[in-house]
Image (tube, rainbow over all chains, first blue to last red):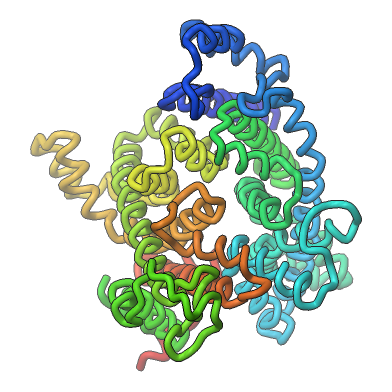
Amino acid sequence: MTRYLLTRLLLSLVTFWVIVTLVFFMVRAAPGGPFDGDRRLPPEVEANLLAAYHLDRPLSRQYVDYLGMLARGDLGPSFKQKDFSVGELIRAGLPVSLGVGITALLISLALGVGLGTRAGLNPGSSVDVLVMGIANLGLALPSIVLAPLAVLCFAVWLDWLPAGGTGSLAHFVLPPLTLALPFVAAIARLTRGSVAEVLLEPHIVTARAKGLSRSRIVFRHVLPNALLPVISFLGPAAAALLTGSVVIEQVFELPGIGRYFVQAALNRDYTLVMGVVVVYAGFILTFNLLVDLCYARLDPRIRLTG
Amino acid sequence: MGRILTTAFMGSLTARLASAWICLVLAGALTGVVLSGWDPELIDWDALESPPSASHWFGTDLVGRDLFSRTMLGAQVSLSVAAVATCVSVLIGVPFGAFSGLRGGRTDQLMMRLVDALYAVPFILIVILLMVVFGRQPRLFYLALGAVYWLDIARIVRGQTLSIRERGYIQAARTLGAGRLGILFRHVVPNVAGPALVYTTLTIPAVILAESFVSFLGLGIQEPETSWGVLIADGTRTMESAPWTLFFPALFLGLTVWCFNMLGDRLRDQYDLETRGYAAILDGDTPEPQTERRA
């Protein structure tokens, strides 16, 4: 198991390095510099600016510098918001983004596994049909459709919740819910399928024959096996959740890093865009590692060999 | 393959409805602008932000442009982006997967590890980064989307290649002295085309979604061009006074993606059923028992 985890750790470090390198050279290859404005700067001023940001050094040196800065947790200055460093901007937005993201993840796990198990234990029942119907609907609605519709319904027409912004707890009801819905659907479908499948296996029949209680069978024998596909789904789900959160933050006007990302992308603030991608990648890779860890704990084939 | 396609696309009522919807959207994309008689750029000063009516079937937007024409124009763009990007993903994914599977050994391990690593990358962010760095050129946008969605196809093709690479005809070609590239393109690629095609159907909705997502954020397709993503973004801005500006593009995007996904799933199940038997689909979604009903 240690070996398995070490390989994974190494792999994610390599992936992280590849992403950083890719992003770094992509940004440097961009036509035009960060200080090309409407007005051409006098050459001396431009030279000074470039020197101030160390952009006059050779590319290889800049690359090494950037890696060094990253290792110290410094993402460099923002080129467009002059008074802020990228790190400060991201730190300001992170609590909002993480709050919404983690809440959404918890909602989708709780609801998805709960509903999926119920449906999978009674395949063909009316609960099953209802849950799968909702799941299909949830999967069909992309975040860019779902989020505006949710605002229209619950904020504009029904006037139950605020349409956007921050301030009270009520502002944080719709965003995690709309973000979570597609994942509730996907997890419910996955859980349903694997629960229904595990139920047919001999060890469940044995457990039944021994006269174990229904809840004990479900929690001790069905779910640990049935949840493996759900856990491996969480890796790619984290990436998708993040993509969704960019839209959610945009629609609900939440000051998270997703919005910084879009704004920075729109006004070509290279360092900020780069910083956000690096932070996002770091999060996703860490999350994937955690998922692997859980998987390794739960799957005896990895726990015992590997 | 023909029978598989027929069963997957026509086998049940929902499948027929979904196929019909996609044909309708395709037809609309090709003829819709002519059909409604309104130029998608034209401003109708007598009907600014007007609800659906006999002359403007889907109503008009904030500045009085016909929403039906614009939705159809959006369909044109969204579908052609999907077509181009899907082709690009096939062009990358099929050779990559076939090569990896054919070589086997360490090269294969390395190439598949690369694919695994790339799965963890938030790709949409890379697409956005590309758009930022190289400016918002539509042609680049198409390519970038395709370059991002080849992983699934590569994986499937590699698996198929592994299963056929010890077959007699490959061995025979090798014995007769066919070059590695010759074997790859003359013998492997044609024989893995089936499953590749099946997964292509599932790439199309993914690419449509990705395009609308990036355009929604204002980073993809730009005015005066339009796409469903752009229209939904516009609709979001005006939904309080004119909900139809959000409703119609959202309906088209949601329904089209759903239909593609559903047909793709059916096609995959049907393909697995015909090639590997019932056992193969039991580990996936529950199949509808369509084959029995045909008689």
